[in-house]
Length: 116
Image (cartoon, rainbow, N blue to C red):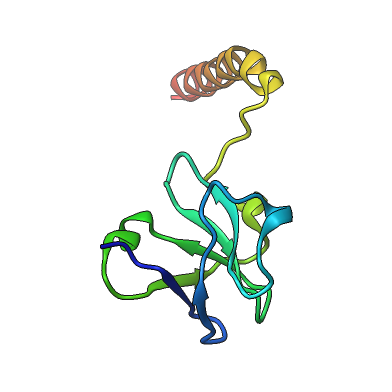
């Protein structure tokens, strides 16, 4: 059996939640709005209809019988610091960023060795 309710730990509101298949435009007013998930932490993001707080939900809690507890998340789902932009620009820049960091580390180490 899957959980069908979320409790907002910010304001205490308890209600049903939308699934991934429901778009933001088609949500009911009394449901927690689904804003996607973080592919790195797997946290699911919802917005409370009562206090408009952004909540993180552990996806494993959905498989439990009791209501899911949504932990308040500052900012919005896009402000999740553990997520990384998956833009193609970012992916193309990644090798150059790694090279710059390695060169910087090499210069730092060589300056420390020569200082001794």
